[in-house]
Length: 553
Ligand code: NAD
Image (cartoon, rainbow, N blue to C red; front, side, top):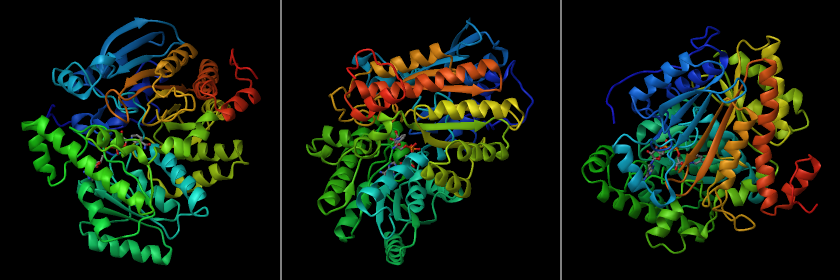
């Protein structure tokens, strides 16, 4: 990996460097993904999620920037795993950029082969929103994490996590949302991370309250807050494979257990027990095979602790990093005894076409986002939980890079919001265009049998067609950029998924494209779940006139 230190900052204001706002939007979002406030290791082009990158290397980055600056409004740029490889004349309503990230032919779709190709400069790991240029920092996952903990509160603790203790690990780009999501639900959380600087970043961005390297101190703080029914988040420096067993040995009662270490990537994501960060880096470089063996063994131990805590009465769930699979591959037969978070808490939302809808103010002015916050309340006043989320986000979420907002909206709602944002741009209430996109942890764009499509009603967990159809229909509908990925979230061989972003620049053409894309994209979630036999999805399709040719209703 290059050692060149460069600092890329999100561009703001109303002056464009590109030939149109759509191209400018792509450029600003690429810069934003690498802004030091946003990215985890921007000097290596790493945005989040282990080695999830925005461009293959700095040469490719420069070439992408150059291409975007010359790209016409009727041309389309092609990006192959972080490298620009072609530019063709298409038409104004076609995407300006099409991307494919980390896609390998299935028989070769494993980390060993990927790592070999990456070393040779032929590939890049795009994660989900890293390689598709719509990452917005930790807020991007916050509402989903908040909703997941809120659902646990509803199902198990009388609507609040007050007086409960959660144990988790991993305070990286995504996992860093966990402490704030728990305290927003009034609970207490100890979040273990082996890298002190990651915890420090969460403290600086107000996602986490306190930090310590002492388990004694963490427990003292946690138990006192729990006793007093006060929300508190504690970042504990340590290795989860060891700390969790220590908790068991001390007989600490823990209510909820989950994990967001980068278990999806045993070489670059998970730090084996007993290794300092420097020692881990050295071993990774000198003996990758040994590193992976040790990381896998630690993950098994980590999952053993989670299973033991489940036995002792904790609510335990996998938070989408594939740690159960690694443990099972290591011989832990009952690794899947605790569920994934999607079947446990999220699937009903997916049936309604709901997913993590997000938007970014290209002006860089927070006031533009506050105006759209207000818009949510004007458009959906009956949705109290949504309005409460907007209030909390305004109060508690510090923007990272370009100001942005996320909230889960369903079929019909996303189109309504997108068109209304376009109107605000058109009538000058917002200072510049707005980018609208989503995460891939989504209803109709992902095939990921250990996560988004775990335990589908009809057993179609591993059917990848849906992700491809999502990208194809969003391209046809005229998204501004569309991406197809492999391996995001759970690692090589375990997922296929697609992303889309569409720009609201206040024009009539944007209005047409927004209307189409913000219908097709969540519509894929409805038809995918209806096809799998979910009655809720079938009802939504019927009620909202989503056409499903072979639906018997
Ligand atoms: P990241 O790489 O930015 O952070 C991972 C963190 O885990 C790092 O801070 C690292 O220091 C820490 N870590 C590694 N090994 C550890 C150990 N043994 N003990 C304690 N800490 C350890 O990754 P991220 O973006 O935060 O994502 C975390 C995981 O969640 C990934 O596997 C990602 O694919 C997955 N993910 C989950 C969701 C979701 O909604 N649940 C969404 C996207 C990604």
